[in-house]
Image (cartoon, rainbow, N blue to C red; front, side, top):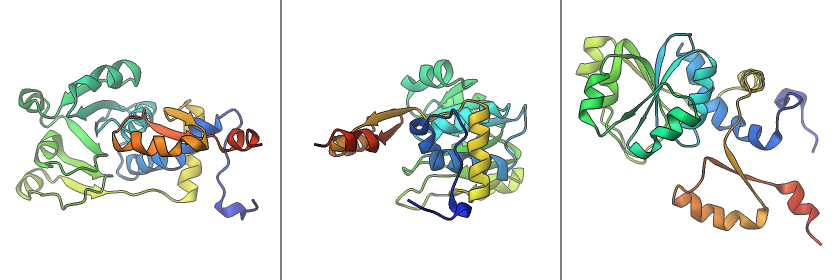
Length: 220
C-alpha cells in the first residue's frame, strides 16, 4: 500500500509491531489528554478509572512521565493486576465509601476511561482544587454532572478523543523510549468471531491483534 508520508507514523526500530499497533488507538487516546491537560508533570497524582484497554495503557504512560498513579475500579480483584503487574502506586475500589472518603481531595487529575454510565460526583470529590476530570469513555446515556462541587473547587470536567499525527508520532517515540507496549493476545483471522464473543464478555487482556501475515501464509 502506498500512502502520503504526511499520513504515516514511523514505528521505531526494535518496537514490536503487534504490541505497538494498539497504541495508534488506545495509546494516543490516553497520551493526548495527559499532555493537553498538563497531567504529565513528575510528582503529580493522577487517577485512572477503569483497567481495560485504555486504562492499562494510561497507567503505563503516566508512570513513564513520573506521575503517581492510582487506579480506580469497581472490581477489587483487579488490585494485584494494577499494582503488582502494571506498577500503579495505589488502588481504590470505587464502591468502598471509606476508601473513597480517605482519598478525597488528593488528585491533580483523573483520566476516566469508562464507557458505562457511572456517577461522576465521587470522582470529582477525589480532585484537589483546580483538579481536572477528563472523560475518554462515551456512555450511551448522558452522565449527571453536579455543578456545586465544580464551583467550590474551581474544578474542570473535560474530554478527549484521540490526537493528530504529529502527537501520535511523539507518543510512539515516547513509548519506544520507555518500552511501553499494549498487553495483547495475537489471534489468527479465523478466530475473529470467537474473539468478538469474548469481547462482549470482557474476556481479553487487553487487546486482540489479528496476525494477518501469518494467516495469509497458511492459506493453501
